[in-house]
Length: 385
Image (cartoon, rainbow, N blue to C red):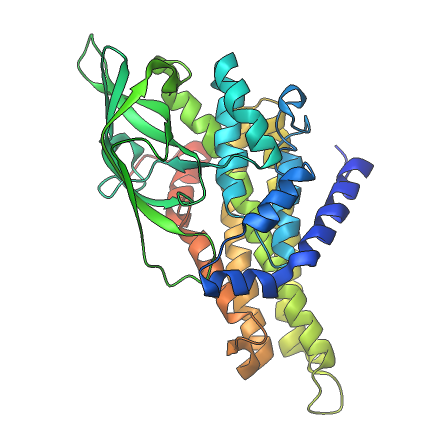
């Protein structure tokens, strides 16, 4: 196993970093505070092929894997302008359609996902289900033409910029009468759909929504994959989600660390820059170590997933997401501490990163649920819930 990235991945990392720096934190922050969006960067990244590096070449993608896509998001985040919808559109939805979609679904959706002209959201979370996906109540009932979908979802990212949303619902088993998970592609302008923004304290151009589905009529071909295998299909999409959430977190951690290091190198109030003092230097060095460790686990998760080892990737992806979120929180907190009062100003742009990092501890899966997963699946401990 090589711990050195291939020349192709090194070139990809460098090129994406240059694109990110072209926009940067100030642009991203301005979009967020003005109510704007990141469509300009999204469009350019798509045209350059970065949004679809993991998608099949026959549909306009780069033919790579999650390792490649994670590089794109990490470098954009490190440059100050992470694209949250990459976690959803390129990763979850693109992966699910690639692995389980029909030929017609692939042809309809994948080229647009690859070049950035199409964005798809993902809707799983419900008010009364939370982390328990078995409690999902959004239900699809059969009709003569296909399906009727009704339910409610919360904290759904990017519905304002998405042309469609991959909805996790449930269908009724005709033999047992029990509900089982199923995935549906639903146009965001379909009759019966309504979404309302959720007011957040996060400073981000990416908005969160409550999604209402009221007897939304769908054709048969809206169902993605086999109706009886939807839970497996769902988890196949959630592993990439955790890998990309790790990349998102690592980008924020790197951005915070870079800002802190630059500041403490130049800030001098005694005989030497404050970065020479161990009270400042050691915590930043610790962040650097933990960041590199988290990236290694993310790269392992991506390598396992790209090799087709879903079970192994599940463990590694959860561990990577945990480690990346923890170091993001530590990095942003230490950046604020290193800058002192300046760390709380808009000018230096590190305090806002703290809130973003804290959110990654919660979403898309909380640290507690990851610890549950590791305790049960890695250590074989009894389930507590």
